[in-house]
Amino acid sequence: MFGFGKKKKEQMVYSPATGRSMPITEVSDEVFSGKMMGDGFAVEPTENAVYAPLKGTVSTVFPTKHAIGITTDKGLEVLVHIGLDTVELDGAPFISKVKEGQEVDQNTQISEMNIADIRQAGYDPTIVIVFTNMDLVKTVPEPQSGEISHSAEIGMLEYNK
Image (cartoon, rainbow, N blue to C red):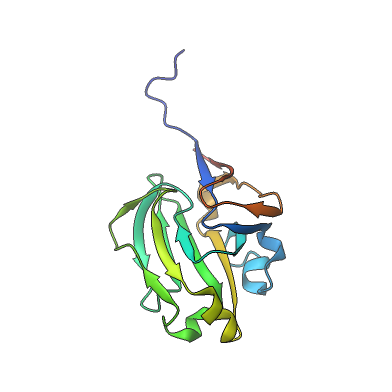
């Protein structure tokens, strides 16, 4: 009657950066826009700080610092991919602000990037958020295209169970 003992089937998802939000289908990399790694959304950043898009635990910090994995308490794996093809920059324009095992939420800065250096090297700094194990997810929030601030609500993610 009151829902005691029921686990939440929803989780709020937030913008990882200040900039322009867009559906994942608008990302200029076919691996992401074709949802080959999973569904999600993207933000073309206007500021260098990158924040966690939801509450969870850092599961992976890539050695090249261009990507960070976060796992929610429901086991959903979320990839925060900073820039397109920026793995080729070998970590140069990134400073990781978190460690594996660290708990994070939308107010936790997880990385600092240098947008100017990324663009100067010929790369796109767009941040892509990908929910990789989609079997756990019923619905993924779709952002409105437009200007957004970091930690602004993107929408509710709904789990299958």
